[in-house]
Length: 471
Figure 1: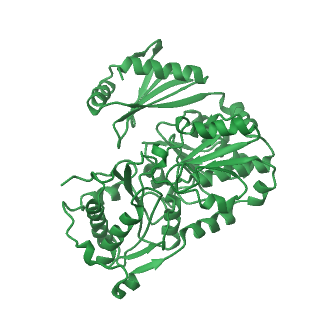
Figure 2: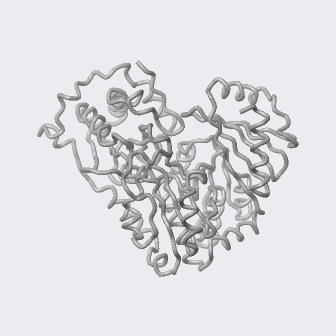
Figure 3: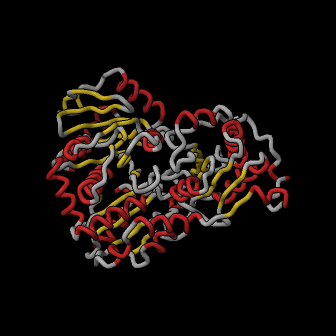
């Protein structure tokens, strides 16, 4: 039987290979054991996104939980986003949240995310505790469990997670300011779980890929520039779009485009958010970011006199600090588009962050480009890009070993001045240029990242990296 291992953000596997009904049942049995050991009256919120088999896999997990006398809170039908599950977990004081999703992975994958009772990713030590409780085989006769059996009715509660999320949005944001601002805005759901709720929040947007398509048209629903060329071309062809938002398969990651159809990376979004929350909204608190984020975040924090903390990659590390009642965290974010702010739960949320940027534009009366220039006046201009190299695991291991043993001193003309290795390998060439190499924890992929004063130089650094490591 396959050993089930949780990566940086849940367990993910290819549907019908390792991601099967029996294996979902196995994971759910491990979750059930952990819940019963840690809570007197355990309860769980569960939902699924737009991926193939979502309803089936939720039903599988649900059957396991009720068979173990665990109360389950879920939706009657339909998909939800990951932030909706996290918010409902907090709202209903549930012991745990589960999302059946593979987030931004290719359409052949599905997955299993765990959410803590504080409304964010379950902490790493608790995920590890669940892992060791996953049995080698499923011992439950799923066919014999009838959800409609009256003996289970006290264990099942149906709620409207989308409405709960909408209520939170209406409470926090000045939606009328956005609607009356004259801003022309667009949203690309990438066929993901944000497609319904955004139409209820701002019905007059231009919408792309906001229909149900579990195949995602064959593309991984990750909101990065190479996957959003259609959105970019739409902005350029329309000629009047001020800003566009994209979210991934489970709507917890953000992609952003300016009026010129140019991609705005997460580093710039994080800097914009700090600028808005501190200068314009008067909020305070520390900023926590992942290892692959730009050093300019630290400079922005220094400018505003707030603390900056760097953690390993994986939002669960950020969430652990945000969930600590002794900590005051303004923002937690990572390069891959996962950002949370203190006006919400300690959870990544692409729609919430997009609305925050749009509210910033509406209330300031300034374009996105103008606001970015305000950021540049504080930290200087820069460009960033990530390139994912799809290579076999054998070559990936060879490259990682060379990184580990300090074999790379030059990448083309770029001399390595210092190396950081908290989580991956970050090679600093000078104060404005760096390259990072890190293997994916869930796919046969080597991630490379670079920052420099211009995008042309960033791409030159990434190409030199590729030539140097032989990928």
